[in-house]
Image (cartoon, rainbow, N blue to C red; front, side, top):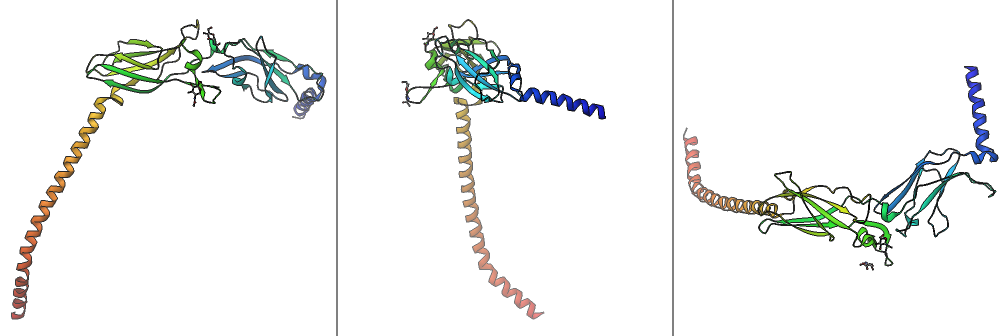
Length: 292
Ligand SMILES: *[C@@H]1O[C@H](CO)[C@@H](O)[C@H](O)[C@H]1NC(C)=O
Ligand SMILES: *[C@@H]1O[C@H](CO)[C@@H](O)[C@H](O)[C@H]1NC(C)=O
């Protein structure tokens, strides 16, 4: 036990010395596994390992710019660098510096360089969101309205840019649709976020949406949106069932009211008859009690 404790103590003193001695700072662990994680232009740089006794600072540059600092002296292993990547067509490089807050700036701290990253080419398109849809069963047209996703970037007037504002004509949505009763899929693409699909009259449909950037060689498609079915809301049949339910309950209420009025009147009429009879009855009763 004693020798074990002594060994631990000596190990600790070695580590503590390494931590405090400034001549050793160049031996700080370097960041590894640096990756860019980016969806709809929100971009986070991630790396390993978790720091102990030191911190990280991130710097980003593109061929035409100096190194710009972000997340200075952090204990994290991630950094939101979105604000440094506004020129989305540029190719950026980041470096993650391992450092301790030093008073003398002569010290060169170790760093690792990230892979290159071009937001326009590499940001992943988020799962599209279907804002609304409408199936006109009599004319056989399925209208689908898709919400253009917002990016973290703003116009001069402070409103957020959508992915469409950045990709412009280099952006299409595709609706994949099928009859609710079968699995055979068809598709319809459009550069607009409002898509009208011609479908068979009287049928119900299920569909989902995908966004695509045609100019890309990789990462062209977004994830699939959630699947929607025309039975589950928003279409004519649904409205009709509500209408039928409302009419039925109104009719029921009217019937109940009318019936109760009639019943009430009958009762009143009866009561009046019995009232006339009652005094006589009680007089008879009194008489019969007294005579006994
Ligand atoms: C980015 O590049 C694409 C094609 O490479 C081009 O169509 C688009 O206009 C560029 N966008 C900006 C903001 O420069
Ligand atoms: C802000 O500017 C953009 C582009 O000029 C425009 O599309 C958008 O409608 C504007 N938003 C507001 C709230 O004025």
